[in-house]
Image 1 (cartoon, rainbow, N blue to C red):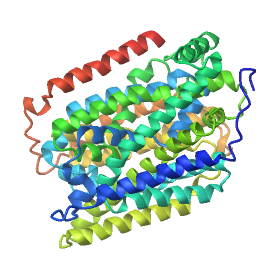
Image 2: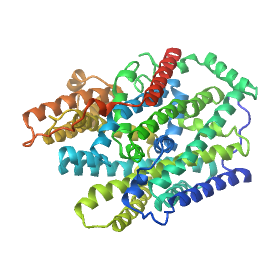
Image 3: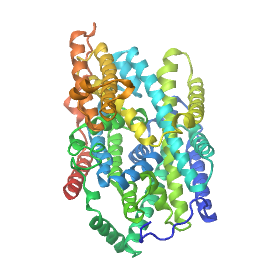
Image 4: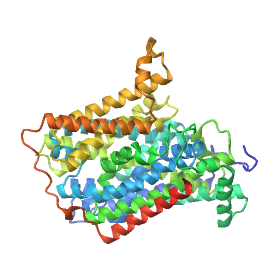
Length: 554
């Protein structure tokens, strides 16, 4: 430990005050969820109410719910670990996401609202037919259950186990069951309304640990001391404050310089924030398109704040606790600085991210199964029967995640990176078929299938080529010919190249094999993409803040 580092509390035991704070948080969230789930006497529970909150979410619920669905324990711990190793450059994942959200609100949401689609597979059904829809519905279900939900619960359980000493499997089971129970009655309405409180707790807890670590650096326990600590951190480790990494950086492979701003990160962000059921579903549940757009821009401002409470604490650990064997130990180590009471608050914030993110995945899994697979197959089912299907699906998804978590992820040292790489395999194809499906009527069913297949195939090819660059004698063969002709690519660059090649394949196949009945188009007008003055001003604010941040920390 650095000399600046005071004696940390033992994390295996929480004080009674900390336990009390966590217990009050969990009880309050559960009571709030049941309160908003209670239907009015004249308001029956329908699929629209359960999966889309009766399309009555205000902008602040939309914005906070998007953040709650996005920020999870593995992201907090993983990005803090990256902040520890790499520095502020990893904040590009959050700050570029803010700009992506603005584009989603301006150009993508209007088409979804115009067409009336409620799910991402539903859009593909409308645009390309049932073949593409069913293929992608099954893919998304596998990803949401086996990667997203399982990963969140496993890393969340690991974090809780580290802090409390509870067995990891017991911890993840408890978190999963709580996430299921508090929202299974009310669906998205319960999840979205409680997300407001969950995000407030997340921000409060993050600011507490940020202030404590910065004040520990300066030795002055005041606002001025926190600012002084930030300045001291910048002076001691200026390389940790570079947003654009040079080629000489050992972490250039993770964040390849200027390509971060103009390359594959855009593809990942568009796939995640524009064409992802558990994100877009929150916006589609808004009262109206303008309300959804206000919610989107609100979430963009929250995204700008996230690096302060997620990345910077990891950077402070680089000064306070150098030599940690793994970067993902940074956040739990900094939690050890907190006194009783504040530790309970930050621990509650960590649980809030796990529970809120898990609940969003569970609800979206149930939405896809119920509305995209079961309802089309059995159109005579009533809302009551569909509600039973949705709730049974939620229970089933959780059980699968709990059963496979340890066998699937227990031996992975970098679960977060595993999930990112797997997502990167599919993101280019997803973005291609959605962008062309939205904005080019010439994209055919055959072209969409070719885009999906080529995206996955190319990603696997370039991933294998990278592996062979590092292990040229793999599988008992000499791969020098392939190594000479296929360059080693950083992950984000690979995603970008796969996107452009897949785009060309999709366009080419669509030209060669057009649909027998051409798609008539969406009948969009210039007014479709017109946004309110408030949205435009708020979006401009996001852009100006981003310009200032990159100008200062370039």
